[in-house]
Length: 389
Ligand code: FAD
Ligand code: DHB
Image (cartoon, rainbow, N blue to C red; front, side, top):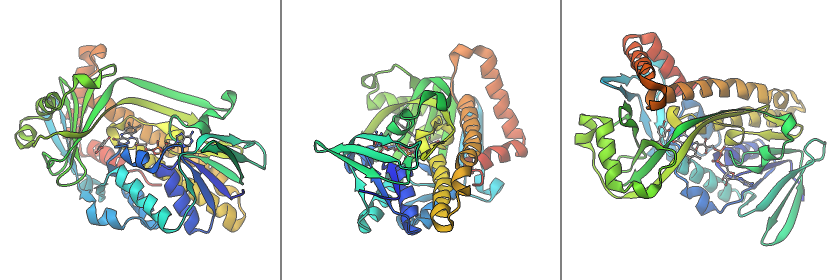
């Protein structure tokens, strides 16, 4: 078997890359270790930057998003006693789109099915080989049978725990990491949201976020200690905590109901450099992780795919390696800015008891500055809606 590009991972990065390559006449095969149902059962990001919206349009998978997604012109920030509406549209001219990662993935999967694309699910032991030569290959097992495919390039779109980054010799890669001493407990519930926009709140009891997937489906998060067992968080306890942390008005408007999904995600900042090793590229969570506070993880995956797909399309169309040679540096320049913003939002909005009273005062001062300065608000807003590609 042979193809032009092998893509490891059928998450949003892998599927978007394969779709964009296909539209430009570049052939690819996607290898995914889980089943389609498993991939769709993961509830993750919910806010899309305008740049990502435009990429989905370019990929021809934006129709349902434009019908069902919710354009949001702003959100509320609350730290201590200070509450502030961030007028994203007024400050930057740009809104964001509230549309779940699960739906983005579903739309991409449907586009793949419609064109009879090669996505191989339930692929075990996927192994990138010889990517330091001009003849890379990828091997995998399915139903007990070993398969192998030759290609020109391998794209590791296989997330933080994937095999692509792990296959790179340790001395060829530099990693930067920060682990936060708490996690986010998230719930999804079939109830109307407590506000028409998102609310991010830093309360003495910890961070809380009120988000949504539609007018009838709410997504909420609370900061929890890292080692908290999920059993200690029955739904009633989460609703009680949300009401305390999100403030009186949100509490008064909050409709509660049974959770249909509940999970804890650790918070981590991580970057691997570079993002290219011979004929292997890393994109999305395979190359970097941000804490979710700035809603940047999925959006960064999309900007990586913008640079990588254009580089590969240029390689095949114009016989030029300039785009693929520039990929790692271009993507990393944007990634580090999103790392900084996500770290800053996380630092502003969470309780860090180990950092003491000084830190709490700095958070309050940061928030008061934000409330008094249009320049500070514009800086936050332009990062939140997404820096240019
Ligand atoms: P992934 O979505 O991780 O996809 C990688 C794919 O590769 C998966 O389907 C996986 O099964 C597959 N794979 C892995 N290993 C192999 C292998 N060896 N062989 C073959 N296939 C493999 N971002 C936000 O902006 N807001 C959020 O609220 C938010 N919440 C999150 C919660 C959790 C628990 C996690 C893990 C992430 C969250 N993120 C959030 C981040 C966001 O979801 C990711 O940035 C986004 O999923 C990145 O897409 P990706 O395609 O690069 O990686
Ligand atoms: C959601 C997640 C985020 O991390 C965020 O900053 C905003 C919204 C969400 O899942 O809806």
